[in-house]
Length: 171
Image (cartoon, rainbow, N blue to C red; front, top):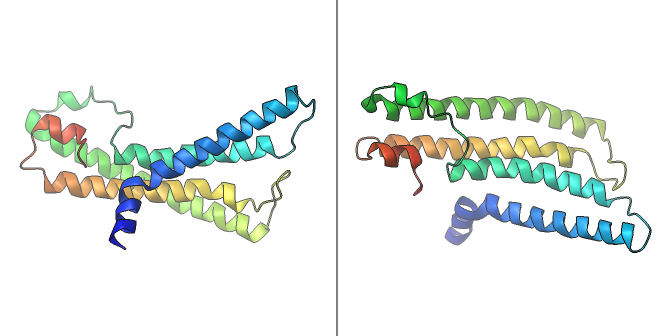
């Protein structure tokens, strides 16, 4: 059980992203082969590739949070005194956490409507709540990762120097 939980904590998002990228690449290769070599087109391949790409984007967001590599505007950060910068970074993380929770709230409403309507995708005939679930799942994981980041930064606030506090590669 500990190995499974460790896997979920350390490798969940990247594993999902790798699988989605592989499926996306294979499906697009098959589509190109069928279109240009076999002179025929698959009806479902573009739809599957699109849904894989959407899920890939939304799974990449929590992974970016985990490794703390999202784009940040740090020019404004250096306007603050050195002693305050750590707190400003944590405040920014709290704002991002709140934003993720807002997106989760609205994405859940959208997800409920898709489940209620029972709409199917045009080519693959899968329930549309599956592709529409990407924002909900992605931002739910993002909120969890941001909460982990906030807790880590608060625990190590006193002992971390500024550079370590801002980068945090060892989370």
